[in-house]
Amino acid sequence: MMRIMPVFIATLIIFITTSFVQAQQREHLVQFSGMVLDGSTEQLYPVPYTNILVKDKGRGTYSDFKGFFSIVVQKGDVIVFSAIGYRTVEYKIPEDLKDDRYSLVQLMTQDAINLPETVVFPWPSRDHFKLEFLAMDVTPELQRRATENLAKEVLERASAGVVSDGRENANFYLRQQSREYYYIGQTPPMNIFNPVAWKKFFDAWKNGDFKKKD
Image (cartoon, rainbow, N blue to C red; front, side, top):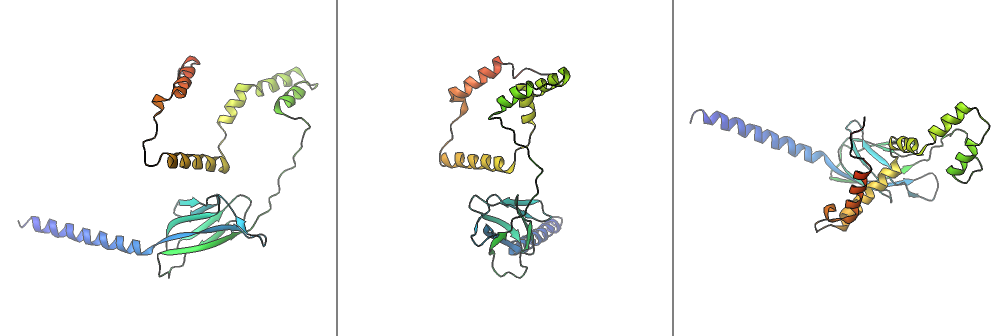
């Protein structure tokens, strides 16, 4: 019994201390919401998919298509707003807030970016360009290299290594969300009963996609 008491007291102290620290942390949490708008002109309009980052904490979110955002932060946090074509803006959450909710309308200013000179060629498609390019009077070595570089397999390999941009990532995320909302409250279908999925599997099997490649 004498040995159990010190262990019980130590456990009780740890529990009280942890509860106190968590209560203090909850007191500093703020639901930070707002809109990100283009303030370059008098006509304000949303800036969709703006990156909203809590500085030095490695977490954040981004605004939706209408410029709305919402994220849990702490009092005194510095919030960084950044978007392609706009100047980066920082905003500090007030430390003397009395409420656990805080709203903000953040205006973004367009930032001019000088792009390198672009030459536009009068070919309606990539296939026409390939034909015209291969028909140019060049040495056999350059023609061989051009033919190899424009091969379908080479272009597919190159495109597979290109990282998706912000618009592609945002579209993929929104498609995932819409798929989840479509089946909310019910079990989503399994691809094991999908004949299209089975056809793709057999086609990949015939093409040797599952074989070990050197």
